[in-house]
Image 1 (tube, rainbow, N blue to C red):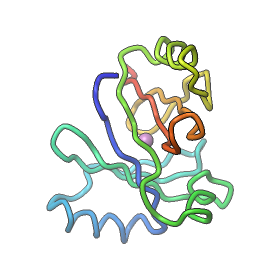
Image 2 (image 1 turned 120 degrees about the vertical axis):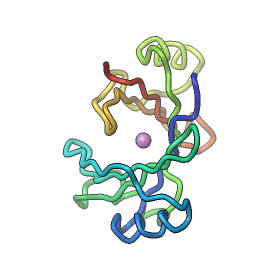
Image 3 (image 1 turned 45 degrees about the vertical axis):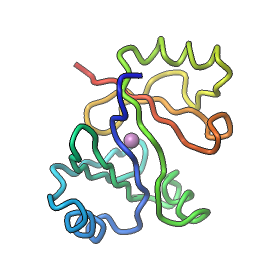
Length: 133
Ligand code: CO
């Protein structure tokens, strides 16, 4: 793992939370991006070497909608940047972690992403991400 790339936070209302996090962090988000395949709208804030990703569901079937229904708003995942996402998936699977997708998907912010099941990571949804270049 190279670094903590971002922390994902599930929110009900992206616009309201963009304003809240602007006040909290002292700087506005630098982009908004909808990921149709995941039924989410996202916004990104820079905080030093890492980022905050806010996620709002755009459809009731979205994993974010289900998360909020079950647990309310809050921290949804930790995303670690990796140099070689396929090699990391293989390594982590060999260590006993459970990938949610073995095939990397196109995520927000121009990245390949893959997730580990929280049941294998002390309840923390872990995202692996690699820049698409
Ligand atoms: Co993320």
